[in-house]
Image 1 (cartoon, rainbow, N blue to C red):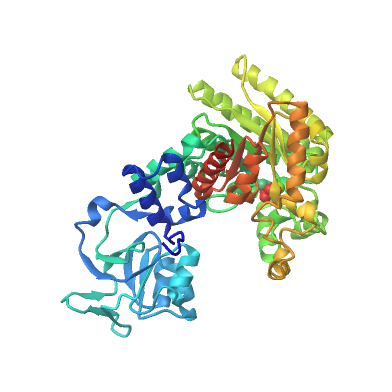
Image 2 (cartoon, rainbow, N blue to C red):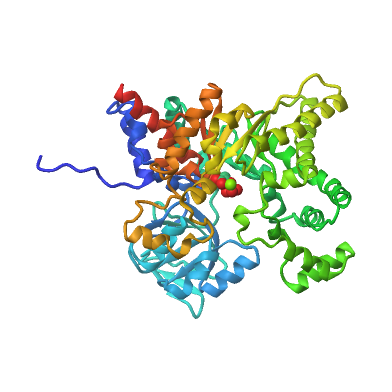
Length: 550
Ligand code: PEP
Ligand code: MG
């Protein structure tokens, strides 16, 4: 043998090889778990065609497997039609002779992309793979006629027409007639078998960052063992949030504590319902709910028209809204009136949220459901902020026990460590905390002095010139930010040996950062739902590597 190299393989191939070799007794479980790069799981996290039906399906043409997963939809022949179909709420497959940059909006709008020409590095292939979108290129038997919106197939009488339904298997490069049943990656038996095997070796927990009951359910499907961060303010964005957003704005625009209380009372049922749904979806697993942490000005409409609309609804003058918007303006809102600072100035805001958390917990307990909320205070820099907030927690807790006639209602109280001063004083912060969670987005921003919203202007230069090895907002900077984390863990546990410590910044789903967290002794990492399997595998591999060193 002259030379030996690791064979390159896709995520699916790596999974199949690991499971097959294990079944044949060629490798043991530990080795099988080490055989897949955590990031390769990305390719397995997309819907696939149910293998039980695929073998009998009508295969019409084959191409190159350019983008992972499966996709099903009606055929469209132009990028414009793909966009129109998307707007009409229909899933579509964009069929082109080949794609070029003008097709990008259509490619984005389509569920899957199919081209007659091109190779694995063609425009369609590169773009689709970058997006993780299902794509087949180079299906040479197709003869596409954009004018008539039809495609003939060499060796077949079948003519594909606009509106026909097809299903793509982007991992194999197969195109089928009709709509085939799909399976979620979480239902793929080999994937499940592999993840269960990996979990046997894992010692560090993996939670998710989820803000809605729907996110929570997805994350549980991917194996999340709890929620490490509910960003409460996210319930005010997106679909169905008009009413709570209106009351939140009313609260922000209040001039007096009395006015604010009225708005908070109106907001209360929405906050409670959203939290209750999330706690319920997690069925007794721990859920860390962060108290409100938005820069306030984000919620005051900017344009004159929107301001007038809100003024009409609130029965106040548009100038009042403009004036309040100006009052709320901050030079650097990321370092402004947010997080615990909101609760210090408006304790009634914290009180409303804490009441919502305890009240829905008590109601769920009454229904025989178990849940243990963890109340997390953001953007703290001193233990006094935690003590002030704890007074509200204690008071509301006592009121809820009385209101529901119960002897106890379990909860935990803790803080994010996301300001360097909090990290420096972690021994003191731990006195008033049951847990820490590293907010490494802000901790990175404040340690580097890089604004997390403005790095776009210079980060690429830093990376190109190799001034930094990696973007610290993606991968923990172990030398600098990592030092603060290590120190906080040591100091925090010197005060409370059993202090639970997690991470909920974006880096929590990055394999190298997960390994760092493992080595630093964190209790868990928390990341977005689709990254949960990646974090699970990375944590299992860290534990295996550590056991091999012993
Ligand atoms: C963080 O700062 O890392 C964090 C999780 O909070 P946010 O991104 O909401 O500031
Ligand atoms: Mg933060």
